[in-house]
Amino acid sequence: MREKIVVELVKGRGDFNLVILDKPWAPEFLPAGFLEPLDPCFLRMGKSADEDFIPTSLTLGPLALPTRHPLCLPVLGNLQLCAYKRDLIEKHGLNHPPAKWSVVLDAARILARTGDLSRRFAES
Image (cartoon, one colour):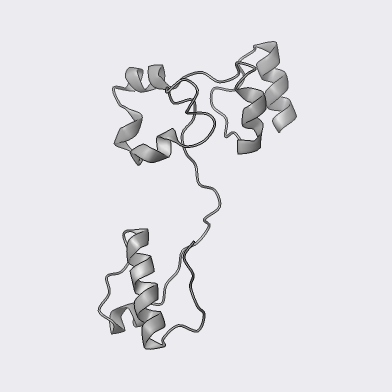
């Protein structure tokens, strides 16, 4: 798919309005001028990117820093499933479903302390 996208962008045909860009492609796409700031799209919709995204996530990565205008939006494609055992969460009076990662970490600490976890969790 990368090759097809590059061919179309080099030709300037504009067959793609939006692409999901794999991070390793950034060093090629950015200097080639394949990416355009997203600000005009947001203005046309009467919105801003920060309405739907955590502000710091918009400044991460190689595509946001050079111009300070968003050239991409963050997409996390590596998290397919987050599961928890409702009975253990309820047993310890914890909220479910967890609304924040900090709540997940707190629950893991509590469950580890009580011996209710069969595996150990680690923080990085």
